[in-house]
Length: 448
Image (cartoon, rainbow, N blue to C red; front, side, top):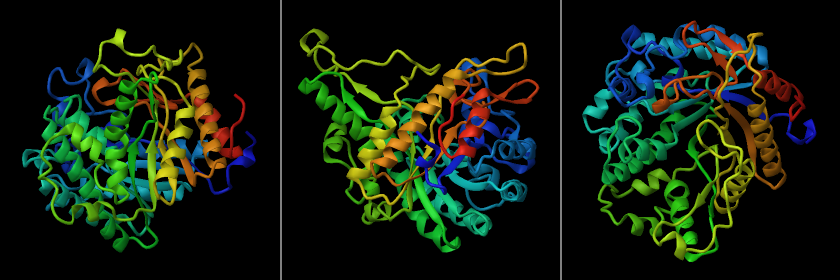
């Protein structure tokens, strides 16, 4: 690719999330989040790690903003900690928490970096969980109050707003599989949570627009293309249902189509959590869709014995990240083009894309993460291909700016383009950070 294949206003950014980097978990009046409670529960997080300190971004944000500026980063996608601002989820305001984000926004703007705010990246106030959490409709109503308040406070300076990050993960991992906070395992809780998350999104869009002049409002979904492992009917059905659960269950209602019927039949559960008017509220027009992409999905049915199924024709690539995820850059172009073809979203951003590798400082105190550069190069090239095929893709955010607390994996997985020593908290730009800086400067792919 030549540098000219990306438009001059293409947004090159980096991304993080509040609980993963901020630390200061109980500082200055912050309330407890479900991830504070979950990580402090023995056996929930690898090595007993917590986000108590994380990268200490709460205290070190000026250093981090200066580092972004030195790399030429043009946009920073970060999330607000809801309980840092509203310790109980609603009602009493914690002014120091709001001041932290206000100062961060000012610092970004002074550095020439555009802030992109995500309102919710999984750290629900524990007080709201105690009152029912996302399975309860009242949590969606609380979110609307929260969104209204922070958009009034920061909307004079912040124009780009994302309501939710990956509602599938919040609902599935938190309320069905129990791998994330709050650690529940109940399919009905999962379904009602998914609905109330989408409802919270839809009901908050209008208040953000009312509070922010020229607001750009969207939502972020984790999406993956599904390929049947063979041409068998069983594998084709498996791929369709997988696509329905992960992708269409969120894309369809956001586009005014309601929940997909085939997936409703698959779940075969009550949908009494849906009230009159909900689906219209969820389908409120948005300005962009954020797409988080890490890997494709290959569907192999377990409904019939392996020996009775057709031979596999689709296999994982050899290149696998530390998360056990296949590196398949073409899948990013595939999912962007498919969603653009099948739905009516006016614009897209790749809001997360990156890889975990076993990074370490060498004898020169450098991190030569060539595999990550290969990963990013391939996926940025896929973005260019999607644009050439008509996708209105406006920007790309690397996940992650910093090595951080990787949820249930604790500090065992490093996604950052900046290496963090979790003892000294010293930051070191990896080779991938210097490479990405050249990409930004050239507005396109460059050699190492």
